[in-house]
Image (cartoon, rainbow, N blue to C red; front, side):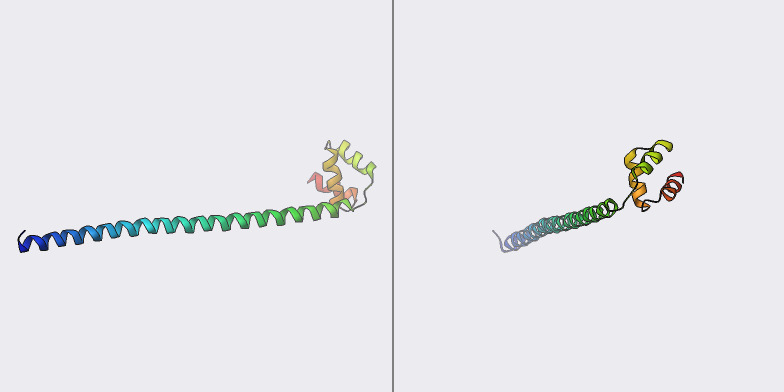
Length: 110
């Protein structure tokens, strides 16, 4: 090879190496982005699970509070029959209104 050709080959090799380097950088950037996305997804899933558990605990506490409210079974029957409701709905509404049948009926008629 002549002296000029060697310089051209080195220049081409240098450009080829630069292109390979850029391609490798792009690939590693994508892998790092995927890893970051994976971490974000895991964090979001953990937050959702924690939120769901907190909601579940709140719901259980609410059910315990409502179960402690004394109600008259006759009021449940009257509300369910007169307003054509399921007894469970009538009972829950009555408990939410501390056993006050008039307040429960007013709420249901809104």
